[in-house]
Image (cartoon, rainbow, N blue to C red; front, side):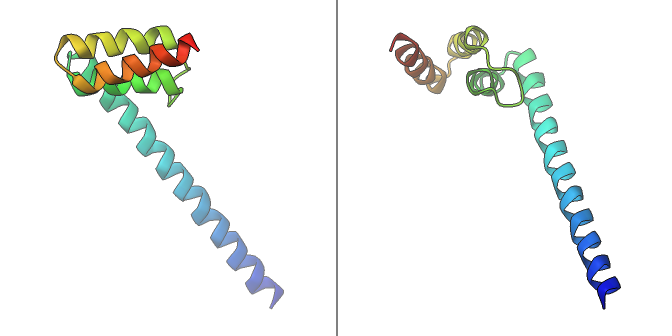
Length: 94
């Protein structure tokens, strides 16, 4: 019946909205986790925040901040941050 179709459509839409909210909350939690690690001087957190600022992932894109985080990650021994900084510098120069 039309009523059943409408109810099924409404239920599907509600599930889709709930799924999006759950995914968004997961992204917010991941950002907070990365921020907390970075604030403690953790190499992985610093690397991830550099990547986030480079890409505009959950934060406003800011290449200056990205470089700062990569440099802090390098200072605590992250070889990946060193590689990412080289890539970023090469991309900016072009």
